[in-house]
Image (cartoon, rainbow, N blue to C red; front, side, top):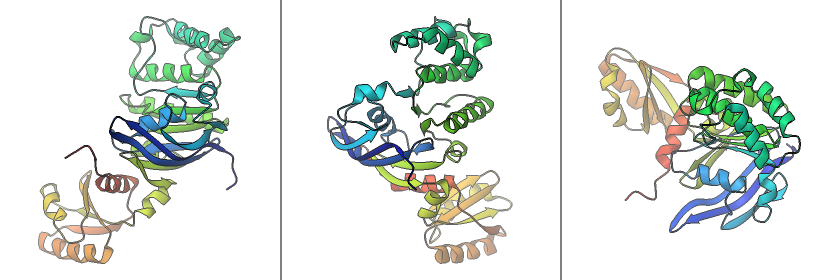
Length: 309
């Protein structure tokens, strides 16, 4: 595919003291796509995002963000990027409109009043413009934070776990807005722990303790793990997860509602083990396609935390 690249970096490294937080990161994100960034807490996702938006300078590596050099043109990158942090970082004692006006002043926008009014309308905030930010629910704070990122009309949005702590409806509304922005040509890089959100992305990358372990579409990431998965159902399965983990060929056992998913890399070995197990226990086994969550947990198990003894 010859689409233009909004992000094209290679060999990016970042240390904090003796901790190697980002290790040889290479990432390519196409213009206008929604790119999901997955990984456990402490895996280097936030540091990587801050490097891409010009807030941090990498120790080494090369690449561009919006055609600008990530090593030497960080100030210019900041002017074209909207960055939404994990925590609400606007001012609780200002109204929605006052917050947006303050942000517009920081960007030195000549047409800030027009930009604020347009953003209030576009994000559905006009009716709440005089509400104090500190009095808003999590979903409305999230929408205000997104509005502040869009004021200066960025070409790239970097969203760091933007839906943490909001209700399902607010999450769904947020993602509808993200897809609208993508359709308008804005590139979105979003980190998330929610599998349903990851599946809404055009492509994904999985990072574990600074290293990129997998990337591609959701289907490609799942297929790349080479997992074979069976669903186990029947009476009394709740207490059997431990026994199932001991079976030859079983590398992953996870609860899915009233069933268990058992996955392994050697399909024949795992199938033979499970057939004997279900005969003895009276349970049922059904071959199923591994899910993105199966792949995610498998990748988490493979990523060793270097800071644990």
